[in-house]
Structures are given as C-alpha cells and as structure tokens.
Length: 392
Image (cartoon, rainbow, N blue to C red; front, side, top):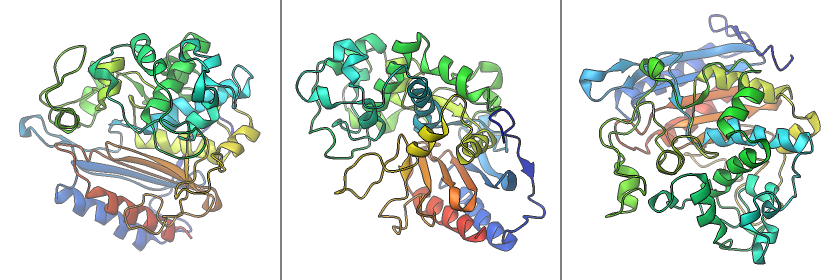
C-alpha cells in the first residue's frame, strides 16, 4: 500500500476473521459509559489490515448546554490533545531526520541557539526529547508569563534540565512544545503547516489539522465548560495574554499552553481530527509508508530508544511501547502484543497499533466534557483489550 492510497474497506457487517459477538460486547461498554455520562460521547474504529471491522459513534459531541446539543457521529472532529505529539510533531521531526536536515542525536542547542549547550543542556538531544528522557518535567504553565514562541523559548532557554538527561522518563509537554519549534526553526513553517503539507494531506487525512474553521464547528466535539481544571492548578493567576476562557470550549484547543501560549498551534497539543483519519495514519505506520520517512527510521521509532532500564515505561521515538505495567486495569495498552505502540491524549483520545495482529484501534472520547473525568481510563483499557482478543 502506498502512502497516498490509505483507503480503508468497510467489513463491519461480516467482520471477517473476527469474533463479531465480542466486538459488539466491547462496543456496548462504550455505549453504557456514555449513557452514564462518563464522557459526552465516543467514536471507535478498529481495522485489521485495511478492513474496518468497527466504526461507530455513541452519545453527544456536545451534551451541555442542552440548547447546544449535537449528537456524536462517525465523522465528528475531536481535539486530539497529546495525539498531536505522534500525529503531527513526531512524523515531522522524523522526516527532517530522514532527509538529513537535523540529527537524531543532535543537541537541541545547536538548532535553537538561545537554548545553548551549557551544563546539562549539552545532553538534551532530539532523541531524548522524543523519548521524554531529556530531564524536563511533565507540565510547566509558561502561559502565565509568556505568550508566543519567542517568549516561551526565552523562558525555556533560561532553565536547565531538572535531572540528568537519559536517566529518567517523565512524560513531558515542554519537550514536545520545543520539538514543534524545532520544526519551525529549520523549515520556516509552523508545525501545523509543515505537518499538514508533508504528512497529513498525502495520507488523505483531510479532516485533520489545527485551528478548525468556524464553518465546520458543527462537526467538532465540545470539551470543558470553562478552563476550571487548569485554572484550579494555578489558583489566583491568569494567562499572560488575558483572562481565562469561560463557557463551552468548542473548536479551540483545550490545553492551556497550546491556547494561551501559542494561539492554538503547538508541538504537544492543538491538532484536531477524526477517527477514520487516525486509522489511516495507523495504517501508514503498519505498512511503513509515512511520507518522506525511511522504513529504517520508522522501524527504529517503534523500538525502545530511551536506554533507561529502571522505568516501567518503554519509549520509542514519540510512541509509548507496550509497558511493563500492561496488566494494570487502567492501562490503555492492556492486551496488546509486545511489539505494539500507541499514545493517548488528555481529552480522552487514544491510538494503538499492533503489528503482530495488523491491528489499529482508535478510541476518541470527549471525557473532559462537560467536566474532566477519569472513569473512562478503565473503560478504555477494557475496550482495547476486548478488541485485541476479538481479532486474535
């Protein structure tokens, strides 16, 4: 299959080679969770090879306020949150590595000069940023003091890693925010423009991109009513560029750093898209046909890259690999094989790819609508495990 022919064939009626009853049972757990208001709604898609064996929607794209209700549909567009990291930023960086523009083990300070290479910064490389092992914490609310890439980078450049790079894995938004700016520095394009032109459009992902246009907002799932979750993490403070958002967040990225700091376009969050587009993307990774990236580099990205053995996490380039905690009931990788790789997003999104089964599983929920809830994590894990079991 070529990178430009990622068409999928519907096989949901026959579900050839799958346990139809088990897939239906798995789906019904998602319906029940939507009815319990564990999330506004959900869209799920599972593909085996290029056959779609499940593609359904349940619940509400917008449930509250009731006057604005929109039912969930198969083509609903979601705030993908941290799936941005592996769907926009990671392939953009890998493409630049593949063509020799940057190096996998090149220090960040050689590309973003104001970051520098003094002290521990010399050990902050592209590889370590991709594997969340560069020594930076998970979340820094720079948007309270900085607005725009230049201001953010000035703040970031004034810091040292909080621990020795290459010794610890801590999932890090700042690392991927910075990778997004690497794309900008070396190409002259924002990560939004570069990823759409070089990755998303060639794969036929026509509904995936940053900053949804107003005319398609009716297709976009709502997220939180106000920014209460992040506002409560930084009480009595407000964004540098103005006030906190109030009312339904709809068609704007939910993440504070992405919205207040970068006006919706960042390397860690900001991408919107549909389940079918993510299935196409998963197929490209299964068949090593991500545009402009060598098969050798794609294979490398799917294998352990951090070199850190004292961690329950295994990280490829951008991707989370099947972890040692795979048997925990809330782990999104529950049931997937040892060569599987995937990622999740805070808004309730996930993408898992299992090469041994030729399987892609996408589950998109708006679990932050109307308020942030965590019950969906166990539901997601059990759903994923049930789908894996149904296609064995």
